[in-house]
Length: 162
Image (cartoon, rainbow, N blue to C red):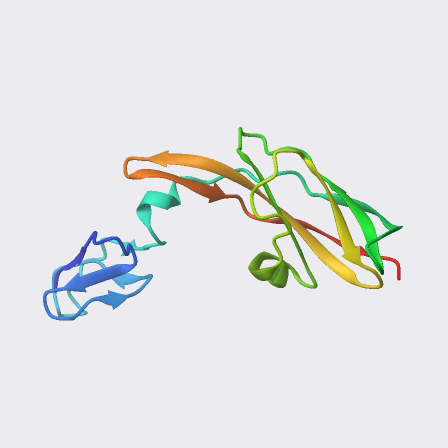
């Protein structure tokens, strides 16, 4: 059985002459259907869209948070975030807030676009503990166009006064 990469856009799809496309991260490489004679040539790992895998964006420095006592908008308090810039040129940063890192990244972007500075002031509801996360945003050109690529998130946990 011969495996081959289809190259149809979903890099984790592979197909064989005998099976419909399968989603797998690890399958044997060889041409025999007999497992005893299969070539030990290696293992192919498919890790997502190959056009994106090579474009890793360096994250910014770990953010620091302070404040949390000066009132703003009702029961809110000002929180001041700052972080070191990404070591590579980037378009800006996304800033997130949530009760966990996952909730921050999924639902808590604080500004609709990216900001171009390495600091942010947030009016957060008082009496809560928040995770603030920052990701670098880089406009990355490819042969098929450009896209905004994100770094991994760096975060800090901060408790806002009631």
